[in-house]
Image (cartoon, rainbow, N blue to C red; front, top):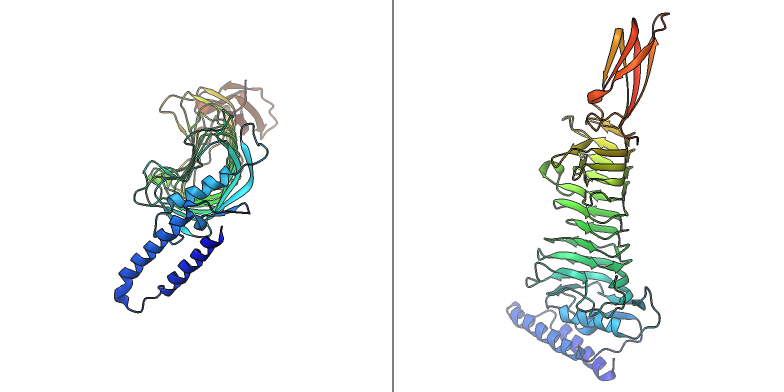
Length: 449
């Protein structure tokens, strides 16, 4: 910044302070008009690029208004453009320039914007945007995102990724019911940390394509949509909207998430896994508060260490009748004694007919119906036939793959006994002579043949 601009900045601030408390309330309108004119006058000086000796670009130096009274779109976009325009040495992924962790600081201000915050070109990386609030104006597009990691045009020679290692942290995004919060498209190793996103009408965070987007320590008023792969959602609270997290890309981990968005009883879903046949997702140590999980044709899905409160449950939804490599183990379910199963099947589109390596076991339940793929029952009888019905507990109808049974008699008789039938999830065992005793049976639905 040259001396002339510095002197002018001091004068403007001096005049602003002089009018900060008008003596006569009737002059308030004139006072506000004067402030706007001063802000516009100040902003006009930043048409000349501020000279920065550091790699911290403060948006107020470009004329952004931290009070949120005047639109700051152009000022912030100029700061972003300057941050990525400086010549840098070295590359990240081939075709993406390493900008050395350059920081674009929002300085704890509240900024009104009317267009998405975007990088002017693709092919940039190692950039941080942090520390303030962005609020959509009434002119903001209802289809837009406040921070949009897409691009107008690409200067990157990398055909797969637009950006790499972009960090968005300590930011509040108030969408003002005018679109979405953050969109990440074909980006590599994006980090969204300690963000609060609310009042959006589309998606709080939308991830499309790309690789390894990490979302953590954040609060969302509605839902996350992740369509890329190898993503991590960690320590996130989602507190409204119909769907908490929508996943349509494989190889994800979701941990420490608290979903108390729209309750299942009112049509809501905590996490929706919409990638039939290629789920490859782990959901661990999370809290489903009156809202549950839906998985379409799950293949390689792991759910463990989670707490389901308020009759929340897991739905396995058939699209092509496939369910393979599913573990739903070591979870807690708490309900209201209304007879709701902890794991349910949605077979409206067709029955599950391709079932392999499914384990639903070791879950503890209070006030709901326990369901499992492994079950043990014992019953007493006096005769030659013992029929043990597992329908109450088994997840899949008519699908017992393994049976182990033992007859313990209460007399000195040693009968021969044999498994006669396992149809309709019922096990029928017959002995050659009438005997009084107890039959113990273990069944498993999830083994591969």
